[in-house]
Image 1 (tube, one colour):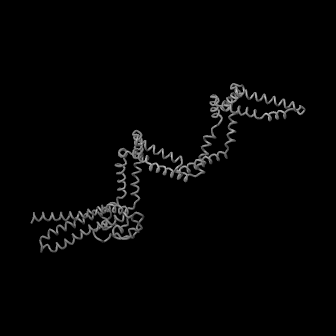
Image 2 (cartoon, rainbow, N blue to C red):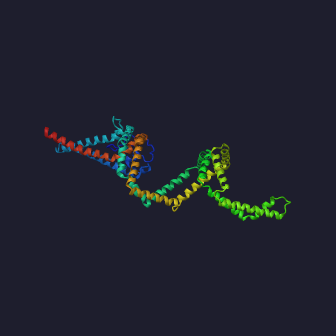
Image 3 (cartoon, one colour):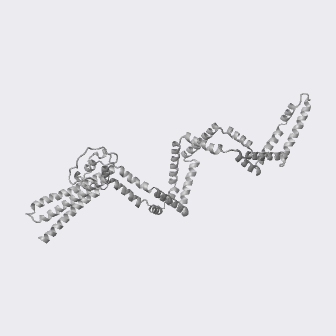
Length: 456
């Protein structure tokens, strides 16, 4: 049944009831206020509004009935008591005003008494036009770049945000929400898909480009600056130490290479001699930075750097080495290890409130908040960025945002839309009926009195 707006207790023509979705306003609930309100899905606030609307309707109806009763008695007794003519005129005007305003209020939401009088049931019939007009009104008067920027400028969002971020609670909240976002992202992301992306990036940026020329250029700069000399020194030192500690090994190698007919004491003398010469040679290389061996090593390394850049054969050999070192299984394993390491490290850090990452993140948030509060220039920049971003969103999507209102109203059922609106404003509209009754009574009395004074 529809929401009852008539001045009588008789409902409009009945129709089969239909189930009311969550949050809608069944007409029987609003009109009669039965215990089915909760069962029909009315919220506590809507049930309270329905009760208030029902009460105001009863007040307006009661005034109309009172005027009718007064009119009947005054009309019947006015010959015996002439002064009742004034009471009759007031009651007559009150009934006219009450009926007229009942018609006006009811015509907004439905057809009065079910009769399809032109220009009634305005809201159900013109629901889509009302929604479009409301959307246009919001777009024109609220979704304006200047309005949004002026409002944001008056609020000083940067300072307020800075004060909140600088507080321990604000930093903790940001860290908590950030941790939740990271955990949610890792939950949504598929490990195989991420590993595939990492593998693709490795192949594109690491394996696809040739290694020879860039490695050669890097090596050329290193060798020209002499950064490899420390490595050569280390190798020569280790060689000298090895020779110094392996006299017997050198002698045994020399003896093993000599003919079998050479006497053993001769092998020993030759081995000692070779050992001494090798040690002397290594010590000379170790102490002389311009030794021929060192120069030969420098020349070899510089030639290698040039070959890596310009020699097709050397470049091809570098590519072969790259393919051997980083084949398909190795690349997949690298992608898997990389993703697993990053994922486990981040999850472990965000789950631990005392982790270094969490502590530094909170400190950074508080520091940024303090800077927003204490640095007017930074706060001004942030406010400008926020204002520009909001203006861009309004400028670009204002029609889409306002279209939400139009589309939402268009999807509503016409009758339910009327019932929803009546529930929100119907109580105040009932005062129109009450005022119409009072004003009609006063007007009727004034007209009758004036006519009586003029015409007798």
